[in-house]
Amino acid sequence: MVFSSLTFLFLYLPLTLLVYFLSPLRWRNFVLLVVSLLFYGWGEPVYIVIMFLSIIIDYTHGLLVEKFRSDDKKARWFVAQSVIFNLALLGFFKYWDFIAANLSLIPGIDLPQLGIPLPIGISFYTFQTMSYTIDVYRKDAPVQRNMVDFGAFVTMFPQLIAGPIVQYKTVAADLRHRLHTSENFALGARRFCVGLAKKVLLANSIGALWEDCLAAQGAGTLTVLGGWLGLAAYGFQIYFDFSGYSDMAIGLGKMFSFHFLENFNYPYISRSITEFWRRWHISLSTWFRDYVYFPLGGSRVDSRAKHIRNLFVVWLLTGIWHGANWTFLAWGLFYFVLLVLEKYGHLGRGWPVWAKWLFTFLMVNFAWVLFRADSLAAA
Image (tube, rainbow, N blue to C red):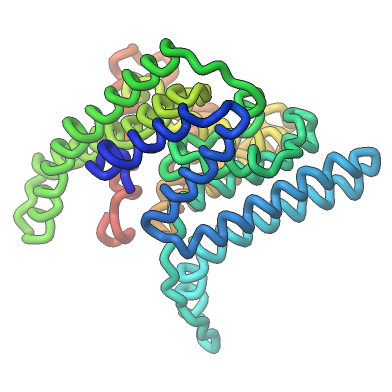
């Protein structure tokens, strides 16, 4: 069920709001858990079992980390168990067929491809639950002793399908107590409508031009100018689509008095690749910064080689996170090369502002070729 569908707008959302606001305050997290599970199960009810398993594993491991806090070795082991479980869950469903297909190219290896559909939102909720146990260990977030409240956090339907990636520490206070006001609801409804307009009026319309260019490419009639026009169309389509979903998620969250962090901040005005990734999919960039880049040492390492290594690891993982295809890997590594050139090759330094913006905009759009193509050959 997508936010722009008539079913969501005229059936699911009104009934959810009605049941939620008619319920006593102490029951509202439970109501949110139930309606979110209904939302998730609308398309793939069988995968609710996997979500329950993820909730139970990370909830219990958060408690175990807190219980054995005085024994750092045990606490770290329970954090590791949680991380391994979440990565194994994501790896099996999202990457098994890709790994099996590529390993089977080696003589003597024949791994079966299972063709299992990818559970909706698994890339988002596994990252959210994984960060919970890490934050509890770091004392960045309080342990959650109420499984219903934790389940409501994991399954919360506004951000379940397409983000933003909500870290537990940013909504822990809202889960315990939140003040419902007409002002919050009105601001949330307004933000939701803005996102809906981005998605329906802009993204879908611009996407039609992109589809025409794809059809022309398939027919062998695509011109150079048409190719660049189509690429620009895709760049704006993915922005309005993704930022529109984020706006709708943030707006829905505010209607229920949750405060999600911003996920986009006018990324196409960026004057460098570094700035672009501070403005685009902010929740993902923040997640990799907090749980991969900083633990590796970030930029505060004793050599340039280690800093480049850290950037390589982060962008390798960023590419892989987006999908099981060599194109996503190439997309991530393309940004790695650009960032290294910016930081150590003085790329863009001393350029006029317009040239910095134009170069960044062109490189981002060029990267969308790798992101959108079905294969490296197609790109």
